[in-house]
Length: 449
Ligand code: UD1
Ligand code: CA
Image 1 (tube, rainbow, N blue to C red):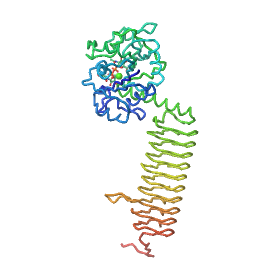
Image 2 (tube, rainbow, N blue to C red):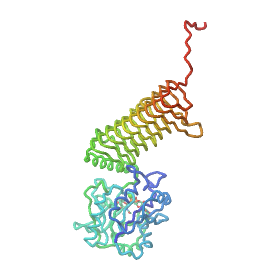
Image 3 (tube, rainbow, N blue to C red):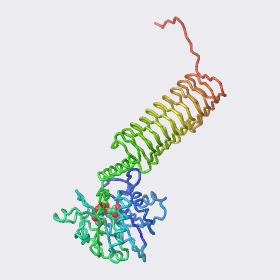
Image 4 (cartoon, helix red, strand yellow):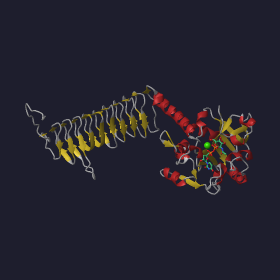
């Protein structure tokens, strides 16, 4: 039997943020989401999240997380006090308790599985994760013998000069035999520099207490301030890029690009410098993205080219070419082989296959058929100040440069719109529509003197 408890009640004072620390984002997921994900494959019988500071906000952010029990810690009097709150919900529980710090987000699933396995096979009362850090300042130090038996953990601020030279640090990840931990939890005292109840003090009260050292010290990076947040982001970004390079994606300048967990690539994608992928960004095979593009929660087909453009909550089918300097906003839906050029904005509009919107246009709340040619500077005037209205353009139609289509309006198939037209009425199939003042020419005209 396994229960998992994540400590997420602290304020995160050193972040200097209105957001609770465990809700800070890292590669598009919050710290606490990452910590929960890192142990989901263990399929624990119970999952408990200790909340306190801005508890409601933390709970709301995890509303979709099935089977999570929220335990309130009020006030927040230290990590030991946090785990004391489990005495009631876990009364009678006979299994192991895995305790995870909510601010240690880089742990790999395998590392946690190894910890649990080691704990169970050794029969220890507690097994904790440790690492040798080049700079262990701020972390608790683990005092142990060569057989990995731990005698105590001393917090950095409570350490003597001599003790600080020990660089074996506590990761904040522990596997406890719950009945044994439950027996000593009430004995914790606040005789330390912070006057708090420390979970780490239980280790000296339990025996045997063992530690397991992680191979990759990056995994135990804890986040207490924005510098550490940035360092963890860098580690995660590096992991994500390495993963996708191994899957056949070329990054011309990997360090200049960022990815999210939800980013997916097909084979032979070329990512040029300064590209950013957020949310569920799915990119098909053979695409060339960038330089300088943001793909946020969008689905991109195969062999698509996107240069210096922003694509957000949009769908782009195969063989399209976007940019430079285009913006596809939510609801833009491009069918196969479209071309969207410079200074074009498309919102909530379906663009039929083979259509071109090449220069300086706004297409919003619209439906375009196949092979429509939208002339330079064509605007769908979709907003009357109160409501949005639709524009429909049939297959094979062409709009002249600088056309304004005042919605609601319906242009049929194979319509031609003269340049500079402002159209307010529907146009039937095959028609030419002109909506502009007739040109006046006065020959040999003398300017007034
Ligand atoms: C803690 C460990 C330290 C370890 C480090 C690893 C203790 C006493 N120290 O120190 O040995 O090296 O983590 O990152 O445990 N929390 C609560 N309730 C509280 C206080 C904290 O839920 O009353 C939560 C926080 O939200 C956070 C976690 O516990 O997610 C750790 O708390 P934090 O104050 O950051 O501990 P550290 O000083 O980093
Ligand atoms: Ca911490």
